Image (tube, rainbow, N blue to C red; front, side, top):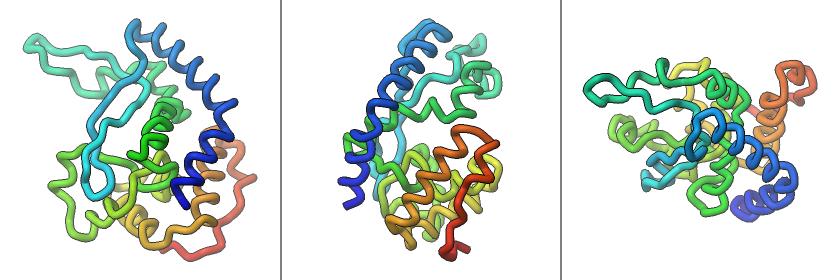
Length: 192
């Protein structure tokens, strides 16, 4: 049922998302003067690796030895804007269509991180990773990794259509503007 809803929502919203993706791809191509989509290996359900797509936000600047510079030195001003608005994540709609991801779920991490998971943290891989999730609407990068994992595992055990609808609604409002925060309905379930 969740897969059916993912595909249905993508098809229904495609008149809006496709033009936005096209304009964003053009913007990234002009800013970086190269192919706008960046591919990276991530861990999916049960730790199965898959190629995740994102719009490029960093340059490939490297040091004299040819090693990439730290992310902070490679992230560009347009890249910061893309990340802040989450437009860099739009190509992951293709991952959802392919079945690698769902619209809602724990964010997919790099495969090397899975070797460091505790048994508790490994539970986040019992379901498909998502484009957005419970941890993303509760602080995203402003909360600790431990808290993110706690929220991810909580979501794994409390999934519902009501909760997914709430996460999607709140994600959309957070993407649009901080001014939209007062319009957000409150989730009536328990989640801590």
